[in-house]
Length: 334
Image (tube, rainbow, N blue to C red; front, side, top):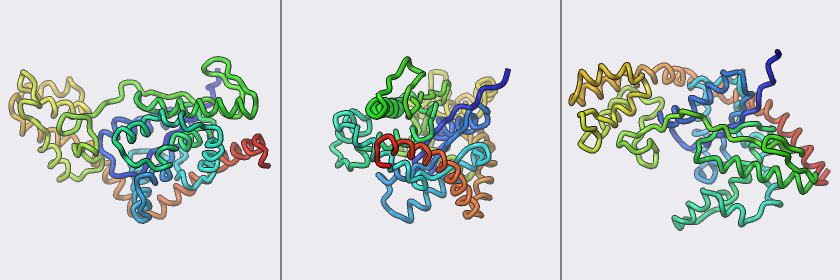
């Protein structure tokens, strides 16, 4: 029996700063595994237009975009296996978003989690933040995407794309959907790919690792940075269990070794928090070092990195422009 054609997978990441090990174990690691599975044609883009809601300095945007490309390549994403490109290099993303704007209502967008969160915090909300689900729908639908890897709390992104696809198909083609996995119209209905057993990585204070909590261990950290972060892990009464095990240390440690491997180490060092932290430093550094060195080597030739993004954009552009052309015929502008 011949193997079925690979499904199309799409994901975008905003270039908004240095990744940490929570980002790696929560998403980045899975991108590499999906790319290497042979089951998916992966489109992975740097979502610089989405980042523009947060970063409004040209030099910073350029720097962070290259930094993110380096991060992707250093963890093992392969431009021969995946299409890696910048969102802003494909004008079809923003053009399709405007077309969708004409059929999407404001009350519908007011239900978006990001908008509701900003409103609850009395933030001044720009149009880009309000409208980002529409651009995200365009990102997804341009490529006949089958699956979008998301966390369980991000399913709404894919639901918005599905709803907008359905509405467009119905308005301009009279299309109706029969069941969850079939469609009749120009836009395919994407499905969320919720990864099972994805680690929720604790930070050095026991809360979820997050830049906003300032409790992270950088993914490409130097030995000195790892040491500083690990030695800062909370190990007082709030960070140890009834057997004296420093739970905050252990919960990070098990990302790098199996619980069976850790049992003898922690049994032999009960109450010896410094020794356990030193062992964690060794294991994190051993894990990060090859990626850190690969990233440093890639960073020596920034032009080569930019060429990878350019080549990825050329590959993505053919598919995106073909879809946009068909859409423009349907709406009657050509």
